[in-house]
Image 1 (cartoon, rainbow, N blue to C red):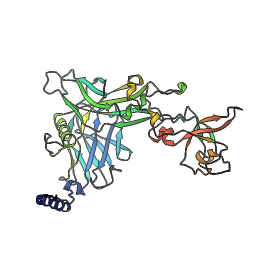
Image 2: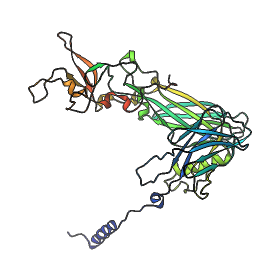
Image 3: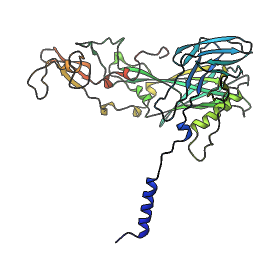
Length: 414
């Protein structure tokens, strides 16, 4: 039976529509202009002031970061006092504790090779202390929350950011290493590669206000949620080798709290709506984000950021191995890692000539050729005479955690 005529009409029409589609690049994607981005707070207390400068990047480009190097950055008071910041790494400018007066107002002045920028003078808003950073182990992950209050009932507007640090482990514990020519004992105190630490900073905007309350109290405001399947919680796994057992903590978060003016709070609220709360028909429409930083050289040029001034409160907590449910831990038995046995004298498949297999897998100055470089793990003992006849080994990704983090324990770790 032949298909009805209208079927062919629909089909031909669909093919025509598909072939007539053209790619559309919105102006925001195609735009080549690059604008200054300013991140940081003028810390008026004893902690360091850190300001990060970068330029926006094209959405269609391959570059994801564009820090501004070689700028001159100063903090200025409304009484003509100036405090210079030093570039500590590319795009990051810092000063030790400034201990500024709470009665003055402050602004930031930035001079690049071709432009000059200045922020508005802002009053000092000191953050009260953080009461608690709490965590709740739920069925699907861990919820972290913050609580605070201002006994003077003055702050009302708050912002928080955080840094996470967690332990990671390799599948295998390596007792040995190659110096390029031979396999040697590994220095397990200074060169262990089983346990490492990774860190990350917050990527969402966390704000809160007590403006509609009779008291300046923020109670259990959610800061971040770590899902049970997150690799950030993999460090809760145990290790068989007790003398080199990992520390009791497997995850840590430090939360920083900033007091805001009403204008600053509105800026961060607007930025959050434009960057995190778009995508559905129920979300707010995008709107212009007006900060308090301006170009002196080209007044019409947009500048992204908002400079506040005040002391910062912080609090750190730890999650221990015992708090991580066993069901959340990864089953490393089913990983892609394979343990190889490699001998001083071995016969490769299809050959009748004995070779030192360790030279061909471990010792990178000795013709590593069968696979990419492996790392020796433990000795292989001849059961008859008790002599060492080789070593076990595996690929670097299965043995060396420094490929993903650092094996230097953070100073704050416990």
